[in-house]
Amino acid sequence: MRVRLVEASAGDLEELWNIEIECFKSDAYPREMIRWMLIDPYMVVIKAVNEEGEVMGFAAGRCKDRVGIVFTLDVRPRFRRMGIGKMLMEELERRIFANGCDEMILQVEARNEEALKLYEELGYKTVRLLRNYYGFKRDAYEMRKKLSY
View 1 (tube, rainbow, N blue to C red):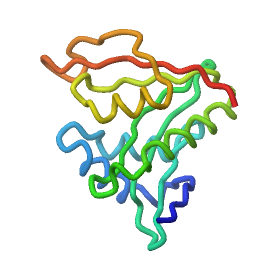
View 2 (spheres, one colour; view 1 turned 180 degrees about the horizontal axis):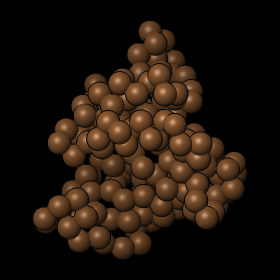
View 3 (cartoon, one colour; view 1 turned 45 degrees about the horizontal axis):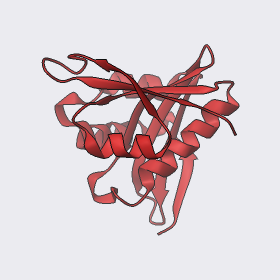
């Protein structure tokens, strides 16, 4: 399957927000947060599109004070385990690095074994536990990675 990674635009708002809901359900970012990601000039939002033009997923991050912050990585459930998340993260890292950041940081729910495995494969290291980050008894790990391209 051929996948194109392209920059998302404000016109993608509804589709990306629907993907966010599909991936995170009640924990999804509000629509206005997705809108902000798409219009903020410092944000990098990349979408993965298949040959039929369907958006398979997206990643969003921002470079601030030489540190890239991953806001979200969303891959539609039916496209998971196909390398889409890895492709999106690698492209996000490249673009964030090009914007002047030499480190990436993210938070991931401690129980999200699939995401933890992906981030570890990409070279992220757990630096601390964030208790109740996602709500009562829903801890997160903060993970970091040095960038060099």
